[in-house]
Each structure stands twice: as C-alpha cells, then as structure tokens.
Length: 291
Ligand code: SF4
Image 1: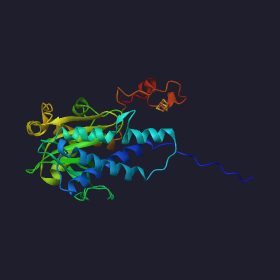
Image 2: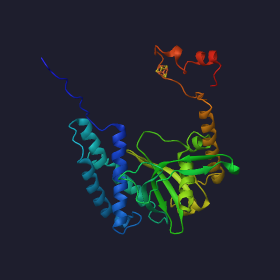
Image 3: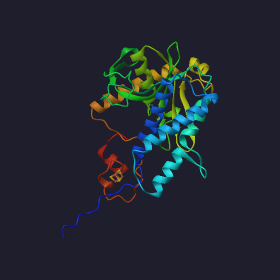
Image 4: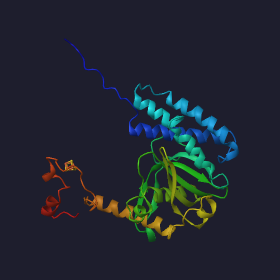
C-alpha cells in the first residue's frame, strides 16, 4: 500500500539542544552588551540589560517550531511566566548584577583553542591546541577546548566560567581528586595563550535556580570577586596536580589500561549481559583486572 511511517516528532528540545540554546543566548547577550559600550551589568542598567536579553531570547527561540505542552513549558521557563516567576535569563542578570563592582569584566565568550572553527566562536579564538607541561617539566600534553566565558581585569587577571545546564556539576573535591580537570586545565591553557594570570574559575548553573559557584580561587581572585569566594588552599598546586593527573591518564590510556573506578556502578540489575560486562565485580575478579 506504500504507506510510509510518519516521521518521529520531537516534542521539545533535546537536553543537548537546550544547552546550546542557553549558551548561544548568553554569549550573544554579552557580545551585544559589550559592543554597545557597557561593562558589568549593574542595578542601574538592569532594565536595559533585560530589554536586550528579551530580544535575544525571542530571536533564538524563533528558530524552533515545536508544538507541545513540553515546549510551551520550556519557553515559559526561559522567558519567565506569571505563574512560575522570572525566567532563567532574568535570574542570570540578577546574579550578574551582584558583581557590578568587580574589576573582572566579561570579555570573551565561547573562546576556542585548537578546535574546528565555529561561527559562534569568540573572535580572539586561536587555531592551535595548547601544550602544557607536568610539574617539574615532566611530560607534555596538548589540549584543546572551548571556554564559555572569560572575565578580565585591565591588568590581565582573569576568571573562567563554565555554564552548566544539567542538574549537577563537579565540586572542589572532584578537582582535587583528579576527577574534574576542565577548569584547572582551561586556566592553564588560557594563561599560556594570553600570558594573563588566572585567578579563579567556577561553574554557572543555568536552570530555574541560577547559581554561581567559584571552585578555584587565589588571593587576588578573592579580592576581585564581590561575593568573596573561599581561597583554594593550594591554588597553584591544584592546577599543577591536575596537569599531572591528565598526563597519568594519557600514559595509562596508551598502555591500554581502562580500570573501572570503584564508585562506578551500573544501575541496571536485570541486564542480561551482566556476566560479560566489566561492571560485574566477579568478572573483574576472574580477569584479575584492576578495579
Ligand atoms: S552491559 Fe553492563 S553497563 Fe550496560 S546495562 Fe548491562 S550491566 Fe549495565
């Protein structure tokens, strides 16, 4: 009868697309804000910032044509709605205005290094990957990436933010344990590219509750950030150890070592492949594989 299956219809943005939309709105906002001569968002410029943000949200959302209650809810969360309160971006601007007196000014957005170029990249992005050395000059690694946002002072101190749109992000303990390398390695990478001095790094969680968490900070960073975050006990040492962790992981990957972390568990107790899967503790034991 030549009846074709109807195409699958996505009722809403995928989590990845939602993240992209939020990143795009935030980077576009600050690019236009800075191009119009502004620096930090302050209480006195909040109305103007809100107006610009609303324009950008509408431009961005106009590119999507979902028709579902889920999409309507997503749009309401972004724009804000009488019943649910201010949207993500209005809350973001509120958070930003808390740092109005800071000498750190949002300056680069989607700054890439060593990545394939993308039209949304910061114009100052560089094509080459960055080479970093382990402590004491032992070992070298090359990294590439894209930094969501870099705030700079006039004398070259900088702060890095990574925007997170998921439920959770790594904590300071994860950095110390070598489980979260992104912020320390990005600090080192941008220091190497720019010859500026990294003083802090953190996550900006953009959900219904907008939260800014500075996880790494030295004394200078603390004096520059209005919310006065806690100084990391050994800021420079933490960065150097993260580089050593990365070198050690590379060494082990090259040797073919892929051990399962102790804390990693598969939640699927009924999987029929359990006996051949590395998550089965007995299989690991029988293979004498490190765990
Ligand atoms: S194959 Fe292993 S990891 Fe995958 S669902 Fe089964 S037990 Fe879990």
